[in-house]
Image 1 (cartoon, one colour):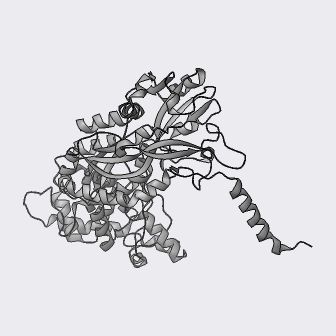
Image 2: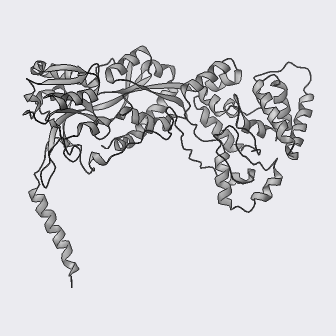
Image 3: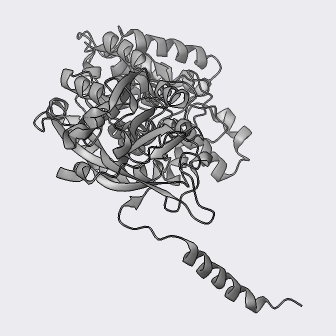
Length: 513
């Protein structure tokens, strides 16, 4: 019979034996602590299969007491142009059909129809269409001055839950169907709105739909009759196309797309789609900032191009390498959420082991890339590296091919575990060299760190019972915002800075650091 009491002692003995056989590592920190091999890592590039789209997930934390305004039922998504909706005020015949559903299911259905707490991301082209069409609209202009338009709309509908009409549309150009149908609950205001907006093509589209639905909806028909009576009593004053009922903010009147179009653009320069800058902007930043700005990631070839676009105004903010030089009167540092490490890889057949063995080697780096900027900084710190022959690669894939096919090397800067290049460089035909020159640490721009064979299982050979480590240097990825954009939108800039500060730990985890 097995004595289970011996198991803890056996496990302890094995652990101590392995610890004794494992070489100690000190000094620089490693990127590999408590992480699985990079070969098992996958990356999420966004919540939508359509490029340029991101469907944010609303928290939907409305109080159950709001159910008194809702008849219950099954719903289609309110993202479609025409949603199936049920409203107690105008669809009493539908109540019996759905009364058997539980309160929880009814509440879930209500949440789907209720205005989203956060908007979805619209392509820039769609927003531009709305901007060009409604630029001179007074109500639209009011919304552009609201720095928290989406929050304003949410707060309004929390206190004034919308009326939901079966078959009613969400959007009529700039106008919200939820608002227009709800307005019928106040015939006087509905009539005054109809009078003042009688020449509004979007409003007339809503009225045409309402008349069509009223043919099969006696409650709705009665409300429209009250509206018409109130409208006809307005007298002969000139219509005011900017009129809104007292207490109704412009944000509550507008459709999702129009409201998003009224918000400021925030063009964020990133690197390639396979790099961590793009992933962080798309996965972490966009869904958190979407209620305030239209965040549009701008793909670039790296830090030098990002710096140029920030200077020209083509980008409002962006990620740059921590070894970049810039004017702090033009750019403001918001945060530094993760580290980027130097990767010096050579053909596995070469005898070179460290950066000091590179004098007779050919080094391939993409032209005008952040990696080339870093190598030039290395040359400044230690001029001996000027003897290395540096050639321009088309891209990093081309640099890898050159190193694999010849007795050459390549260099790149990236966050370990987070860049697509990691999966390409970790191959048996290449080996990572040590970047162990203390001269590179002068001035504090770079810090010593190590790369581990647990993350680069083929490019760094491991021992039988332990990982091996290759020294390197790191610099922080730095998110900067243009002072020109910050000065134009000081309130938004402050909101964004605080939110990104709150996200810093999450972003660090997302890039596996």
